[in-house]
Image (cartoon, rainbow, N blue to C red; front, side, top):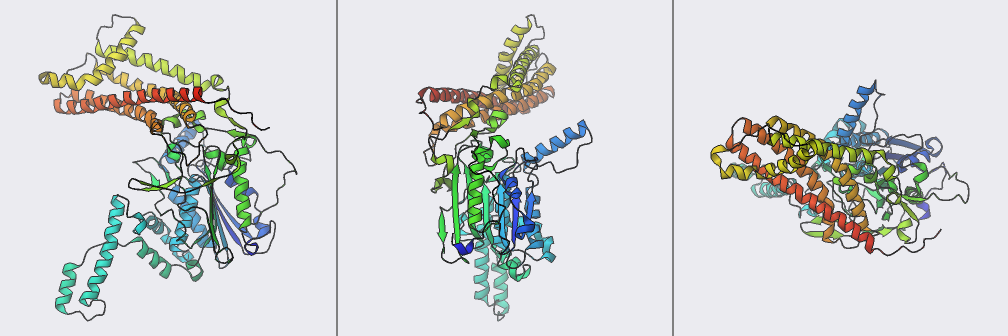
Length: 619
């Protein structure tokens, strides 16, 4: 970076810097014990000494309420937080609050820095995108902020989105085409000049197309009518994000995705962009949102116009890059933090000097894994990361992204949590295993009771026979109906026991999903090994979705079983047959998912046995 575009660390001169810091999901103050890189960066700033304004947002799902009043209140709060995390609740509010801070404080000559991690990076990039699209509105126009967010998340109508097949994209194209056709019609009939005859006016209204406003039209109106003179030309001087997730919330329910074009060269509102990416994260729900451009440096010799982009891969999972693990286990995340700090300082960020003792040893590289601690993540879908930025139909667009730190060093000594011997000492593992067998026996015994009014066998034999027998009844209900329609639906000896069996099966699903997620993540990691994002992805990696298929199909099977029992109780033959068909399909999908999960585990074992012994690592 040109020296004139750079301020020395600790300098009090230079323009005022407005620094927005948006933290990740459920991240907030920790007393320094396991801060994220966003919080660590805030701790390195000194706003009073360096002419800065600092805004910190604890992010989606953070416990920002008053202390709980008791145990029950704490459970309710925890439930609300989990629901908020799953739904991405609060992300629009986070965007609105950060943009509102700029509206209140931005003045001519200010430099804007935006930092974020995870869903906080999602927030940071959306705020930056809004500034690029609308500018910064006047403080007397703050009531428009929620409207601006709605417009921002509407589908753009530019050419870069024309390859997408979606309802929103189709409506956007129709709006753009309608705008052009109506403009041509107004010119043709003389409506523009005011010289239209009565016949021309009739022709105009007969041929005029109804349409909605495009995003570009609204943005131009906002800049012209609601932004101040300096707000119209506002730029984001520096965007620094750690492992941006492309969406928040649950797919198909309340998922929110960054909808703007991921390209940056055509966005003059962005000056300098830095993105640290996790190389080893495998949770599909944390898929990264890469910028679509490769590294560039434009107009380097003109400090007032210079624009740069750098993205880098770092070893470790999501929070090994963005921080959040114990302070003694932050060796990998410290690499990403120091890289970001160096890049931001080169672009002018002022901060306090490093107080570490000269020659202080770097912390060990501990490679964590969230599914190791919370294995249910392993049944939410697993996938490897690549350099693919986006897809237009079947065409995948790739860019070249360099590695940094330990990602460049094949001899780096990295200690994986999967290598530790703590699993067998983990009480949660034994609790899940115990619950699995308890629910398995209970489901089998109740299934036997549902199928046979008179037990006549011991508990273990009844559980064994009932487990297989009830599964066979679920799979064969439709065939039985079609084979003897006059007696469809056939009543079970004990429908109540069947309903209880289904209820206990939900507990069984929760227990085996924990164990399945643990095993699936371990196997998937062994298959992935130490790979590069530009490596081809073999088809076998689709097995990472097998546990998700098994669990979702099992839940669906239970729901269809309850509906089948309800229809049978009301002697509704067609309805029972329809629910029975859905129950059969869910049953087949469940066993397909479980079988594929076993194949995944076998592939993991084969990957370990085929792997050569590691070379001695550097001390």
